[in-house]
Image (cartoon, rainbow, N blue to C red; front, side):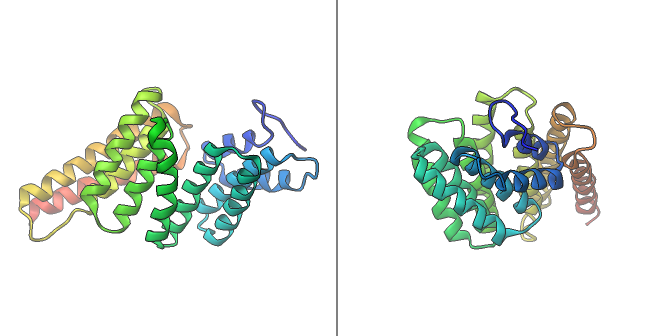
Length: 237
């Protein structure tokens, strides 16, 4: 049964997605797409949501197909901000498929739209760039982009918003990768400490902004334990 939530039929699916109920969100979006009376705006939203859920399930080819459908409708509707956001999502899928240069080309399209506007969604562009450079092993550049994402998110979102927690968690993962054996003990120790600080910040934010059983929280706890283990291992060497 079709349910309208806050003005858009697809919004309930995004609510389920944010709560970490990914299978329910997938089923909801798929069900809506069978509705013949669904207009192009809501249909594009369903394709977007389904693409995001499929990325979570690592169904990247299916996610790419749905985001391409979303892009076709966004172009038809002529909404430039939706076109930019869809390009960003397509870039994310290509990043997951390890087609990094292609991913960066789509993210650049989103950057070209959002940057002159100093738009709040520029934070997601910076995060996506950070993820790509992380995959390219350009870790310091990735950290710089995560910091830019955090800065913009903090300007436009509440203090303990879940998106800020996600920035910190991802930046913590990048700090944890900086394990150059040629570097000094102090250099490696500082990176492990920075990773731990990021993971703790992410967990504390998510405890205030997400349901207690959300997978992000248990993931943050695992990251904290791993960061502490890395620090102990570094001290023992």
